[in-house]
Image (tube, rainbow, N blue to C red; front, side, top):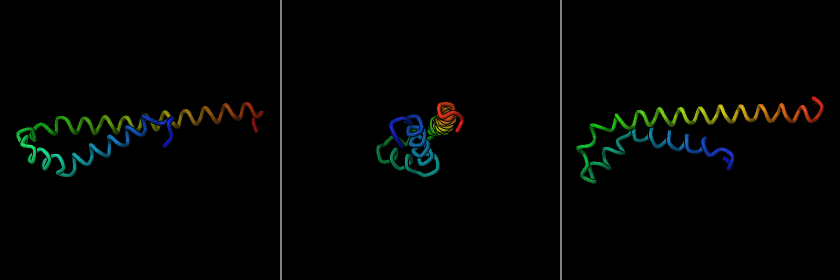
Length: 83
């Protein structure tokens, strides 16, 4: 990914991290080792909205990228005389 797509980069990274924490016991083990296992009941209130946010951010970045590529191709074809 290039420098022009930071939203896509953040969206994909956040989605992967949130999905790993939602569907694997990574946070359960880490919070148990650190001694914060009392917070395990609140993970669903944070992780599922975070996952939804990052999936939405990824789709928004893809939509924005696709829209920009479409306008760039239309702009180039009008410069070339429609060729």
